[in-house]
Image 1 (cartoon, one colour):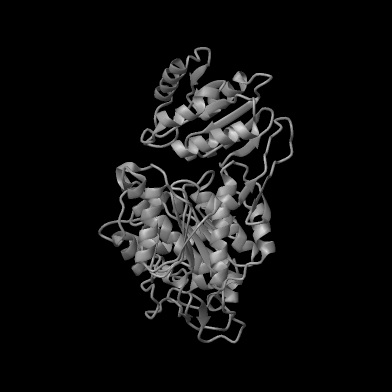
Image 2: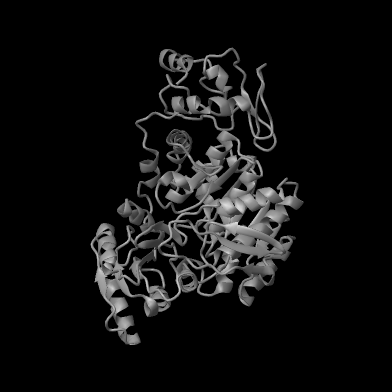
Length: 529
C-alpha cells in the first residue's frame, strides 16, 4: 500500500475526505471504521493517497469520472487515468482483509429462485444506479449463452475496449463470474465492490438474493474501473432476471431456446421465448438464433412492439470443416469454419461452437453500425483466442479426458453429436452427474447407446440427483437397449469417479467424457490435478 495512504487511513480519525453528501452513493460505506478511507466514489484517489489534490469526483455522461480540483492529467472515455493507476491501493484501504466477500454473497437467504426486479432495483438505486453509467451487450437464451458472451467479450477486448464480462455459474473459482479483459476480478476488488453493495443490501427490508448481490457487485466493479462496455449474461429467463435493469443495451442477443426451467418459465418454447425476449428494450437492436417457428414468432412480435430491428443468424452461410481428434496427440485441436465468406478458427471445438460464434459475429456487425470500431483483425483474433472452460474441453491426456457443461436435453444432444464427429468409432467412458429437476431421462437417451461404461456422481448442489438413483436410471435404459454388458458404477466422490473411469478405459477406448452439470466441472479438474 502507498505509505501516505496507510498513514492517513490509520492516523486520521476524521479525515477531510470522509464524506461527500453530493455523492449519489452517500452514505457510502456507512458503518465502516471511520479511520479507514470511506468512499471510493467521492474523492480523487490521489488525495486519499496523500497527494496534493482534494477535488471531489463528479460523474460525467457515460459513467466517466472526473476530478473538480486536480491539475494532474485526468483522461476521459474510459475513466480517470489516476483512478486506474492507483485503484488497487485505494481498494485495499476500503476492503479490510477480514471481510469474506464470497461468504457474504453466498450466505443462504433464499431456498429457491425468486424472480422479480423490485429488490435489485432498490439495491441499485441505493448504489447510485451504476447500470445507468455503463453500456451493455445483453445476452439471454437456453443454450450457448456463456460461449456467445465469451466470443463477444474476446472480440471487444481485441478491438481495444476495456470489456467487462458477467456470467454464471462459475466453474473453478468464484471470481471468474466477473472479468475484465479476460482477467478475473481480484480478491481486493471483489471485497471493495461487495462492501459497497453490503451497506445498502443490509438496510433493505427484503434482502437481495445471491444472484442479485452478485449482479450488483459486477455493476459496481465495472463502474469503479471504468469499462467501456460490459457483456452481461442473463441468469434465468430474462424478463424478471436481475440483469434486466439495463435500460437500453447496445444490442440484445438471444441464443438457442429450449425446454429448461419449465416450472418457472413455461412448458413450451413459445412461453420460454416470451420470457427470454423480456430483455428487449425500445429501439435496441436484437440478434437471435433462428428458433423454432413458435419461439421465433414470439421474439419477432416483441421486437416489433418495441420498434427494434431483428437480425437472425443465417446458417446457410455457415460451413464447418470436419474435425477428428487423435487421442494420442498432445496438440490442442482447433476448429475451422467460415461464415458469410470469411474464415475463422476457434479453440472451442464442440460441434455447436461455430454456430455460437456466428451469433456473436452478427452481434458484432450490429455494434459496428452503432459506432464501435471493431476491425476484421480484432474479430478473427478474438474468435481464435476465445476460451470458455467446461464446453467440450480437453482437460487431460492418456487417457484423453473431456468435460462438457451440457446439462439439458439440447446440451446432451450437442455433446453426442460432437463425440460422434470428432471421436468416430470410439465409445467413451462417461462420468455423469445431473440435477434432479432436469429432464435427465432424455439426456440419457442421447448418450447411453454409445457409452462403453458409466460412472455416476452426485453434483454439489441441493438440487442434485443422487449417484445411486442416476446409476439405476442408466441401468434401466441399458436394459431397454439390450446392452446388458455395459458396466455402471456409482461413485462416492469425484476422485473415486475419475479413478474408476480410468480403470474402465480399454486399450481401444481410452477416452473419458464427463458431463451433466456445470457444478461438477471444477471438482473434476481438481481431481485430475
